[in-house]
Length: 280
Image (cartoon, rainbow, N blue to C red; front, side):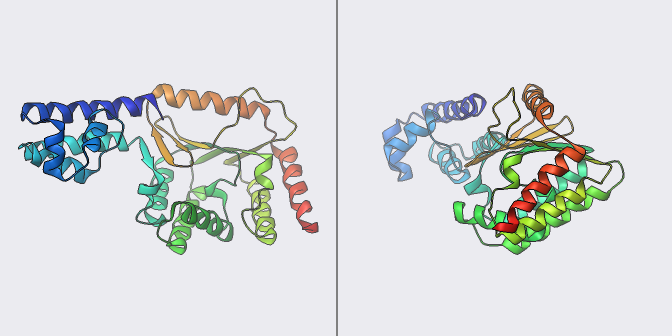
């Protein structure tokens, strides 16, 4: 977990403790008022657990300062605006998150990204995207609004054909082979990638399996102009708007860019992966 995230959670916990102390209530008594285990009060105050908006509302009322609930929720919103648990993010289904992606793409001139295991969402065909979203739904046990999510993801691709937009993406060669969908769908997806190489505003590189790299390719990320980097892990989506974080991911992308191949060489790797599916 990020140090910045933990520090923000510790700061929120310190504010909760301050409110409790000002009210002259000890932790055990406050827990009794709220109907919580005493350990929950301790965990919240010591930054060991992330509060929910309902927790903060109840806390403010229990210490006799209901007017502080807005401040506490504001602190929580600031914390969650950077680190969003997929479980909570997808609680309302895929459509809402995909529509946020549409907004990001519309507001961005240069979109830069790296994907180690799948085709980038903005290049996905509907059938492939359907399998990607289905896997995420199964993993996080979220609402199955798969078709709404797919339609929103397809709307995002309209920006590929808007004047002034540029897309600089790198994929690991392994991503061309990962069969998260049936072979015929993967074959169609690879055909789509080959076609994208002809767009003058799309720069698509592939890092060959045999290429020497100077950075460990841990996880995928997207950079939107110079204002935001979005990083996805198994449990969390991180929104990083600090300049130092963005510059770090630009540096990582640059190292992967140096290892990648483009143009005809990238097309050959895609074609080789496509040909391998003929015997599947």
